[in-house]
Length: 172
Length: 196
Image (cartoon, rainbow over all chains, first blue to last red; front, side, top):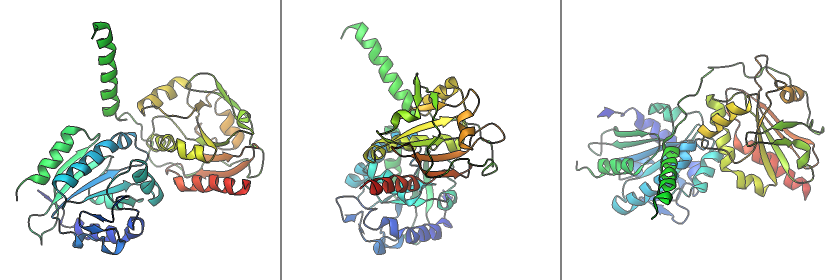
């Protein structure tokens, strides 16, 4: 398992920096409570998540494959909401402004919070070089750092959703 | 089902699957370029220089034909098959309705020829706005607007032309970067406000 312990501070930093665009806007349209996260920015910090697995979805507003994968992203989110309600999905607008990130989320009615990563610093921390990229992070114990256990780049098909779910459902 | 009906169905299915998995892996990366390599020769408030250019879809588009009807966003990009350009226009396709709500249409322009633009836009999965070729005489429109670079490509530039044909927004952007979408929306929204 590739350890990304060093990424944890980056996640914390991004999520705290990203509070503004996430506030209310970043949550599901209908819900104030998602994956145990209240729809208030102050509460949307990774340490408040009880989850030890996270799915990161890197997309670009301008990327045709990301646009085509939007249905798959929602399918994955729906499946996770049903089977793994404690595991959060976080969308990251790779190179997108907050406006573009939020517009993408609204256009495709993405049911998970999305953060802008205009200068790609956060994405580069995960060695993301193209979009869409889907990463599953896991930590072996509640106190350990996150490690990457699965990555898929490109169009999100049913087989990739299946693979993500398998990694998320794998017993500890 | 008759066999004759089944075959087109297979083709349709194949094309859908292909379009979902096709990615633009053939892009040419020119590396970091001089951010701006020209001097814009038009100003906000002036009448936008009129032009007629051939389109990828066939036929021609004349800028002044939009007068009295819609605002026009002229989006010049430097070259087909390059990374930043390929990651700009699909976003404009995505917000066609939002532009429409602001009475605006996009015209995409490059100095590439029509066959090249055809292949490129097809590889992007198609675009829902006219793509115009400023190929011959080479870059004549780009030159008229003062955005033809010394290497024969155009700048990455956005112009908003209002319904009267006047230039209302100019952004000759750093060629290496994508212009933020909100700047364009802000410009279009200010046109709406000034009309009320």
